Image (tube, one colour):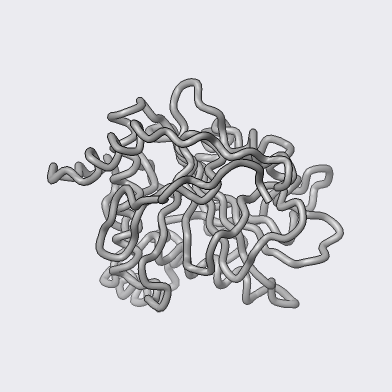
Length: 295
């Protein structure tokens, strides 16, 4: 268990239709928040996905205005709760779907500073009541949410229908995909890691909340496909996204198994995988299909 006192009250800082923003029980950095689904029984569909992007966008804009924030690192797991040292990931607080958002601004520590440590050696960041109150007031204001630059939606249903028609004529489907996904290169060999993949947006966007609902649903479906295609199927999946606003975004996807000889997520974090510069390095144009999930 992380050391320190839980955040008193843990009041919601921003509430939307399906998701809400609050502090985690043990914030690991001054910019550590959780975006939590209000109703755990709600399926992840277009409405829920769109509202998740809205909440993240609202949090991003608020902390840009209040603290000059420049980036976020986002964490979510599916069918997985860490045990033991939990290197590379925050501990689970609830079974309710939760996105951990580590927001960075000049001079603030990054998520990796805490997550390189075993869970029992981590210390909770002291609460900042003034900042949280300012965030609550800003996020709850009725001002319009400006859309990020770049595509506001991913491939639409109409474009998928066009893709199907094009496929009959021998045209590749990959060109309309919002993300390119491929196996991550192994650390010390020319082969690929079988339980670590990377995804990058094909088009340039200011931030990931500008990718749009369809793109997020496509990414979620791709993560499920990676889990199901494994033999045996992965017990769970973990996703880390590094979103440098205006500077590129990259996503790392991990298949999880208890009792693994090598914890690739722990290796990724302890060897600098969560550095903000990594997102810019990985952001590039893909000129062919994603070799992992597209044929």
